[in-house]
Amino acid sequence: MNSPCQEIADNIGTLFICSEFKYFIKITTPFIYPDGDVIDIFYRRIEGGFILTDLGETLRWLESQSVSGMRNEKQKELIETIRLTHNLEVKRDMFIARFNSNTNNTKLASSVLEIGQALVRLSDLWVLQIGRKNKTIIDSVEDFIKNLNISYEREQVYTGGTDRNWRPHFYTTVKGNNVLTHVLNADNKSNTKPILCMVNT
Amino acid sequence: MSNETKRITENITWVGDKKNSETVKFRVPVVSDQDYPIFVDRSYNRYLERLSYKVIHKEIGRRIYGLDMGKEHRNPDGALVGENHLHKWSEEYEDRKAYSAQQCIFSPANKPLEVWKEFCAEANINFLGAMEEIPFVQLEVDFDLGGITLYE
Image (tube, rainbow over all chains, first blue to last red; front, side, top):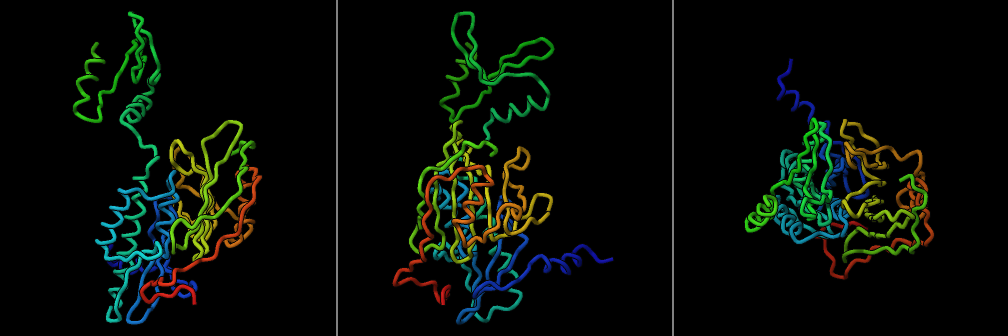
């Protein structure tokens, strides 16, 4: 029986499928974008060496994920960091890795893996899209309450004994006991005291 | 997506969002009797002839329905569903699970108007506008890919 390493060595190459596409060889990889779409890398010989590129697909994918349809400043900054880390060029929105003709076959294989990793990292920047709704701490508390099968209302307005209106995060009922819950979180330290005062009043 | 009052009344104009990009795109709002906060994003890579239509929900900032053409998709269970596939939103997988589009999309990706009509029919969107042709790639005079030629 082969060792796991031997099995990986014997089979990992079959995960990359090559086919011709216009002036390129298309390498279909086992890497995927965050939505499951498969990442293709394109190889082409040029004078003095060869290149690997995504032919613009990663930025097309990234930009079409957002409400704005554009990259934001944070994404641009991180794209540049990833580009430098993996020594990529960007032209016409294509990420390109360039190699000279002295590059051996091992280098080609490792380069395909490296640009694949870079494209996965780049596509993961979609989580920074402005307009994307992120889960809040209150959402997480709601999940927790739901999992315990506790009946609850979330962020409803209730009128107190002094006729003042309150909006606790949760109103839960367990075995006839009613509990009002306010999740104590603040976006910065200076806001903690007013929130505590308001909840304790 | 089953609501049949969804409609697009605007004409569609392609936008090359940047000079010297292979990608052209458009965005157009979808109106409905229920005022769903949705719009359609479409992008097309002219060199690869890859096309995507995405119905995006503005409030959650996510695709809730979409068509991809020209690239393979792998579902969370590892199954490949084909180069032309539809993404449908679900609680469990969000937009990560896709289905083959061969039962509803018959035109190739480089026939955008025909595909658009088929997509609208499948998504129950009544398209009342007009769509212009995709603009040709316009390279700058000093355009250089560093020895890489895409169009010969």
